Image 1 (cartoon, rainbow over the protein chains, first blue to last red):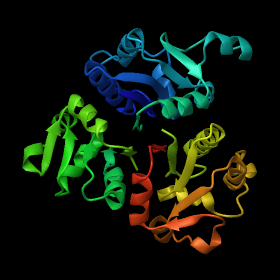
Image 2: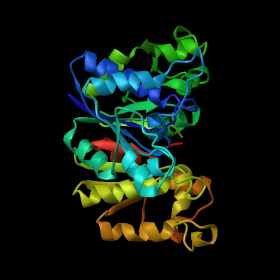
Image 3: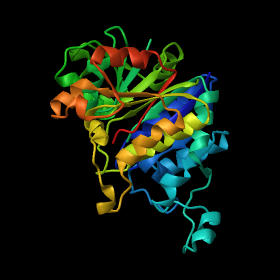
Length: 129
Length: 84
Length: 119
């Protein structure tokens, strides 16, 4: 079966990321496909590269990177991301900012990518923040 | 049949008001606290209940893991999330 | 999956999630999905008439929801229980069908996917 997941919560102020990672890992282990994980609202902060996880707390960014390496598309809503300072090098140049802050494995996409993924998928599962 | 994912106490209230009595509910995260004040048959993500000191067996709940959550989504649609 | 229900449950100006969800609903309609939109909980405040959000530098929610018809979102619903508990009268709202809790259960069961924006 083909899943689309949505992550709406930020790391450290929600469990949204942990829940989506747990679900995605279990689904892949059962032979299912995660068509795309869509990061929306504060969920885009999951893709912020400049975060440092406190010692003794699990570092979600490592787990996201592993998921991306297994072929899962980590799609960050560009409208939600820009206003929260999550930008790739292209947007950095466009808006003349000091740094780009989108973590490896993530990409900025439009809302249309959420809708078309839902239309192609068999199930949509949302993890609120 | 609809599958309900509940993420908070308020989410639980909103869900129960709008679900068919036969639709399964899975409690995630802070949604697990709903077990303390409700006597309803439901499922709970085991690790989230354990982390919060909630004794699943003392309530009418069944502890499940992510693999079982995935299996439930296979034969239920839509999957609806409730957090408020 | 093409039958999509968007549920707005957050207040219109305290955060931006409701507005972001309306954007998603309009994109879905533009992609020819069969779109329904429901307001419940604090989300019902989005439907109050006479909003002037420009005063606080935001987009007016009522203007956005008036635009929904242009995007061919024909199914616009509001939770009657949420209206009642918040002292809002259904007859003060325009072009939105009221649903009781059982009707909401049926509406949800009838969808392929349900998209929300809870806090």
